[in-house]
Structure formats: structure tokens, C-alpha cells
Picture 1 (cartoon, rainbow, N blue to C red):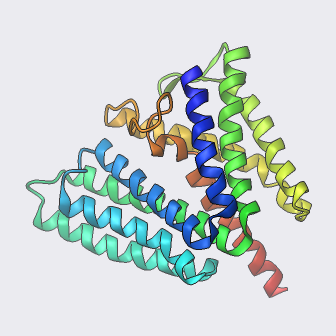
Picture 2: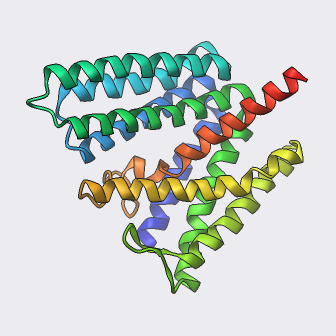
Length: 270
């Protein structure tokens, strides 16, 4: 546990200053790098990271889609358009790979990678767009809800956990941990909104987003078990890889961006 705590502290000491003082280009560049590494780790899980015809387009495509909102200061609609264009191009490319390289590439793994690449890229593109449009507090909200839920689920499970939540998926997760994580993750998310004076309507989103963050974590565990790996990587001692740390953030950032976009459309229409 000590190794896990020390790693988390060091990572935060490096990550927080970038968010506070980095500026849009630097921050979105970091998000693009994280997305690229996450895609690489996912490809490694599927045993396709050494296939240059799959790995290189997937990694570069993810990084470009995430970086573009920061480079041009794109709004959510424009960022979504970039993402959609990337998905269409990637789909056509992966279809081509499945046809012309079907003897050397497992098609099931190939399209699993396609879906997960789109998912990871969408998550970090949403995070970049939220930062560009709403600033640091929106990203802080996503990170606090996801990581707050994960952290307090871990400690709640250690202190009170007896009944397992999904032992066949993640043996260490408990019902008490899930409840504790949801309570504290929601509270932290609401606190971020209160501090920034945002409409209390948005604060209601913290609860479902806390639950969604845990679903993202569990879904990532299902994929790891499907392909027989313990962690996506080893870059963070005690935590695993980059994707192991951001698996809960990806769905939260996507849904948060959708909520903000939906609210903007609602206000604009009315």
C-alpha cells in the first residue's frame, strides 16, 4: 500500500502543476500523450502493439484527435466533428486491414482494438474540450469524481469490505468499497461545483458520474481478464499502467462533456 500511496503523490506533484500553469497547448499535449500511451497499452493487452499497420495509425490517430481541440481552441461541436471524422477514417482503415491482412491479424482482436481506441480517444478528446471551453475547474471535476471515487472505494473496502462486489471480475473490490467510493466521490464532485459557483443543477451529476467511473474501472478489468493480463502496463509502481489509472476517468469525461453539451443546446434552443 505504501508503494501505491507514494506513486500517487509523485504523480500528482508532476500532473497538478501542468494543469494549473501549463496553458491550453501544454495541457492538451499532455492529454494527447496520455491517450497515445493508453492506446499503446491497450494494443499490448490485445497483442497487437507490435503490428505497425495497427499500432502506428491507432496511436497517432488518438494523439491527433486529442491535441486538435487545444491547437485550434475548438468548441464541443467542433471537437465532436473531429472525433467523428477520425472514427470514420479509422473504421475504413480497420476494415481494409481485416480484408487484406486477415491471415496475419485476429479479426476479433482487431475490432476490439478499434472499439477501445475510439473509446479512449473520445475520453481524452472530451477532457481536452472541457479544458478549452470551461477551464481547469471542469477537468478538476472529472478527475476529482473519478479518482476520489477510486481512492475512497479502496480505503472503504480495506476498512469495511467483507462482501465481494464482482469477484469474478475484480476479486479485491467490495460492496462496502463501492458504496464508500460513491458517497465520497459524489461529495468531492459537489464540492468542486460549490467552490466554483456553478449551477447546482450540475452538482446532481456527481452521483451518477461516480457510479459510471466504477463501471469504467470494472469494464477495463473485464477486458484484461478476457486477454489474460493483470495490468495494462507497469509505468506506475503499485498501480499498473497509464490506462489502469485513467480507466475510470475516460467514461466520466465523455458523459460530462455530453451533459454540458446537452445543457448548452437546451439553453440555446430555449
